[in-house]
Length: 165
Figure 1 (cartoon, helix red, strand yellow):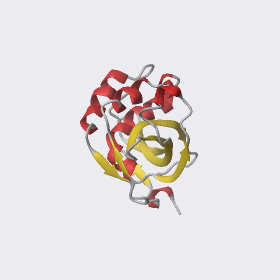
Figure 2 (figure 1 turned 90 degrees about the horizontal axis):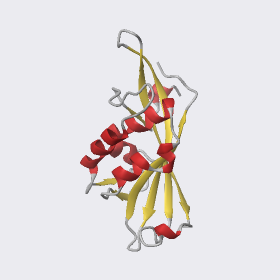
Figure 3 (figure 1 turned 120 degrees about the vertical axis):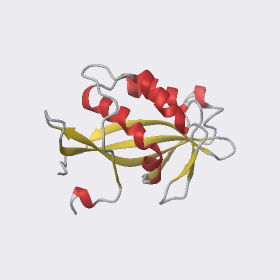
């Protein structure tokens, strides 16, 4: 199956956050605030994922984000345009127990990771789209004491080798 036909890829049509050296993470954090208080459902599992006020800060300032640079940083920053769709198309749910003291209250029932995919355009010098680069990213979701799921961060971004037209 060609990449263009894969229905699990979220297609992002423009680059909002550009950066030759440094991504403007403060702007990314502001952009993410529009999702706070909303709930989105994963199509395959029917899990309801809540967005709390700590998500924009964690996404923009986490250790995972701080160590990113280049294409991966640009991709993570621009993924924010499609958070609802990335959640809806997430799959490959995996559980892991909470191992950090700082999360004993907010992740009492552990963590879930889901895999999701998105594509970003690559432009030529004239601003025309040449192709799309496809990325895989994990949604890091905490499970609170009442069993609700909260999006905490998006981590482990990887560029896939395929180059869709």
